[in-house]
Image (tube, rainbow, N blue to C red; front, side, top):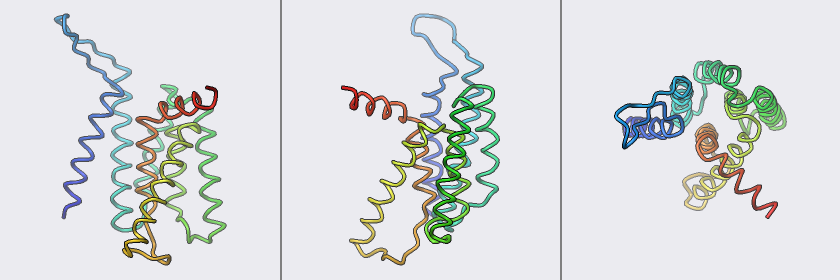
Length: 197
């Protein structure tokens, strides 16, 4: 199936970007030695584990429209470890992010009686909040809903879906998470500079 290629390509690509974010090995041009940063290595490995689960969620929800707890609960442990031991995000931001995401998504489940999103999306949202903190969570959610709206509109106008079609939302949430993780701080800086220009 083609999705095997996409999984392997996406995983390699994301791992490479993660190394650029946490370069635990650096090779200076003029020095005959290598700089090694143990903290960056631990962060790199921690994020790789969380990213593997996010990639699993992306494709599993895309194929089966379901997010099993076995994919969303274990990475929460690593996200909490990042907050407690590395302050990424800070503990306060992590708690606010996780709680806000839980209320936001659970509210949608209650209002729609489970028609808009499912319980798996709630737990994924909580993972996003803990992993990103409340500031980057806003970037992730904005990106996810924007992507969802654009792609859903495309599917409607091309008649590949209709108003009664069910569309997996997990892939959009995962895409928003990756966007927030890698460029979220740049987006926040751009937006705040725009406001206070």
